[in-house]
Each structure stands twice: as C-alpha cells, then as structure tokens.
Length: 373
Ligand SMILES: Nc1ncnc2c1ncn2[C@@H]1O[C@H](COP(=O)(O)OP(=O)(O)O)[C@@H](O)[C@H]1O
Ligand SMILES: [Mg+2]
Image (tube, rainbow, N blue to C red; front, side, top):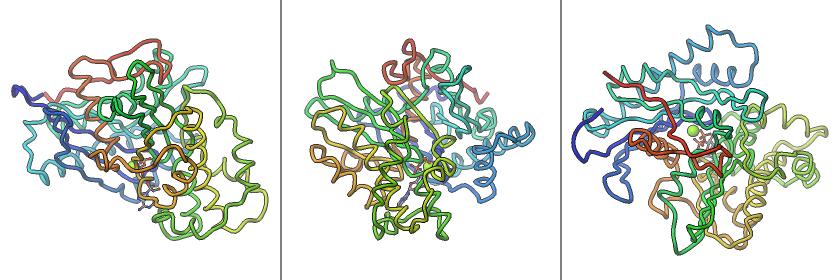
C-alpha cells in the first residue's frame, strides 16, 4: 500500500455480464470531482470468453475448470493493470490500492442459501501487480440479508448527486440498473436492476450476424417492433413488476428465457428491434414509477447504442436522456471508477453499500484486502 501522504490514486477493474472484456480506470481522488488519469478496455481473448460463457450458463463445470479459470483470470486482470500503468506512465508505488469486481459467474441473492459468486484470483492480482487488492465486494452485503447489487449507487451518489436537479443514472451493461438521486438529499436514493440491458440483443445479434453486438443499434433500427411479442415478454415476466430492492443476472435473462417467448416464426431483425424496445421500455417504466421529472444520464456500453438511447428518450417525456459524458465521466468507465472508489472506501474503513438499495440489514465495509507484501 502506498504510504505517500495525500496520495489518493486508486485503480478500478470491472468486467461485467456482457463478457466483453476488462475495463481499467486509474482514478485520482485527491480533488473533487476525481480525475480519470487513464482508462482502457482489454477485450477477453476468444477462448477466455468462451470458457466464461460456458461457466456462466452451465451447471456441469468441474472444480478443476472453475479454479483454473479463476487463476487464469487473475493473471488476465493483472496484465490489464500492468499495461494500463505503463501506458499511463504511472509508477505503481503511487497507487494506494486497486478494487477488482471480478467476473460474476452466478448471482443468486434470493435462493435458500443466497450467494453471489465472482472469480478472478485477487491473490494473483496483488502478487503480479505489487498493488494491494480489494475484492469480494458483494458477499458481506449478502451475509447481511442484502441483494449485493447494484453496488454502483453509492458511487453515483458520491459523484453525481446535485442539489439543483433530480438525476437518474442508467447503467446499461449486460443487465441494466438505475440509480435515483433526488435533489433533496433527505429523500432516499433508490437503485435496482431493471432487467436485461444488452445481453439479449447481444445474444440475438451473435446468433444471426457475424459480430458480437449490434453497432449503434443500426440493425435493430431497421426492424419493426413486434407488439405481441413485446407485450408477452413484459406481462409474462414477474421480475419487471416486482418492487425493489431487486437484482438479477444473465443466468436468468438469457437465450433460454428468450426462446420461451419465441413460439412463432419472426423476422430476426424485427426480434432485434423488439429486444431493444424491451430494454428501453423496462428501464422507462422503472423510471416512470419514480414519478418525478429528472435528468437521465446513461453509462455502460449501452450508451453507444444510439437507437436504444433514442427509444429511451422517446419513452421518457419528463426525463431528457444524455450520457455521463456531459457530467464529465466517460460512460464506459463509470463502473470501473466505482470499484476504484469502493476500494478507497474499504481502505478508509467506510461502508460501501446503501442498505435501502440492497436491503442489507445495515451499512457495511465491503471487500476483502489482499496485501501485496
Ligand atoms: N458501439 C456500440 N453500439 C451498440 N452497442 C454497444 C456499442 N459498444 C458497446 N455496446 C454494448 O455494450 C456492451 C458492453 O457494455 P458494458 O458496459 O461493458 O457491459 P458489462 O458491464 O455487462 O460488461 C456490449 O456487449 C454491447 O452490447
Ligand atoms: Mg464490459
């Protein structure tokens, strides 16, 4: 751990349910707002992505497969950090700690013995980077009866709260989550997963086209929303009308979930338009329930899907939609910056969860510390 007085540089590592790769953010918290010194995304190698996909969706993984992937992923994370440090010309001795979310392979907060499982060995990260590593952010919240998700709302509150306007942060990764930040700070922050973000659109795009996602939503834009399919998906899925706190994952919203609604022969492009509409309309409905005008700021890879943003904007007449870029933070690195901040909260012995968001019994210091020495 860096002992330089006043040093406040942390690294955040995020790899979400889209399985697209590892986001690294080097963030200096010495001033407010914090400064993003460097950011980079390292896409997963095809074989890593394939093995992670298999692990996330299958129930027949062996322990050997699980733990060797955990080890390899720790090395991949360390490589991303070491590359980022050299690209940014930042000396590792200046880094107080790094916060690593890990790769979620199961999220099951409502089962009889609830759990949320992330892999990516933090011991390797600490050893191979020489930087104190904070990981395992979610299980304390689960132990306190919480959902362990979403965790970003506390960071959203720290960075984006404004006393002049209500704000809503919308993170569109594989799964989408929102954070309601009322201008009146006496009112509670609300945050929850709304359902699928990009995950179903990515899956459908991969199945029908030779690419990993629908660039700008251009393919979906050319389709026609299938009203009957959209209505059946929305009314047939209890999660969408369940009251928060709630969280979900790609072990639930996946190819199997989609195929249970695709009884008829549909045009593939029309299905894509419908899936984009599903994401936009479930986010919009979740926001409408809050029933107050607000400015809406999108982050996550979904911020690049122009068609999705247009549909969201059209569905939210009282909430103008833009991205966190207008608030000064690149939408691609909000989540990684959140884990840099959560590492800082852990090292400073401050709590990282918001109990009314996760339903944990109390606020708690989150994460385990893996020292480099
Ligand atoms: N140019 C783009 N056009 C449309 N969608 C995009 C674009 N860039 C990224 N995305 C979407 O964002 C996803 C990655 O978002 P990300 O925030 O990293 O999600 P996660 O946190 O689940 O990894 C991609 O899988 C893709 O669906
Ligand atoms: Mg990602």
